[in-house]
Image (cartoon, rainbow, N blue to C red; front, top):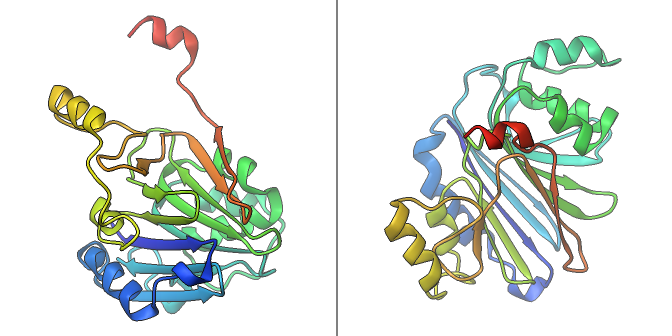
Length: 234
């Protein structure tokens, strides 16, 4: 199942201390009890991962994982069903292990983010950091099977597998409940994406890429949507 936590902070003064970050990461330990990983990319970024090792139980599958050319660092929850087929498409032979996570890093190096996610057949929540332009991207599978929550107030991004990891972060712990979203929850008995119950909290839409840059700009992109003709028959 796995669980991850990412903090992308545009102000080093608001950065969460490592010990506090790891305590927040531990809230998703039950999702990934086999091992935990952590990386700090000062001064902007911290990424942590709780791993449930299935496809590749060796250290070669540990996360956060950096691509071979050191352009990308990712955390990934899910399963890519066609990752072996993708390896056959790629002109790359220096794999360290058998994980679908490593396959994703090679796809990113070869194709970039948009083409990569369009090639992925599976269920996934994915956080991608581009070291060259210092941008962070959040990506969710087209069906929205894997959860991807985030908080964003224009300065501090917190992205996680569990909503309580957002609401326990000090930037978002004191945020009030959004009354309009609460009304929606009471009507539907669940919260659809992109809503979060508290102010400045959200979910990534199924089939969506959201990119944040170091100037604080947030860009939404849909890489998959339900075809128009299909909507008419629902």
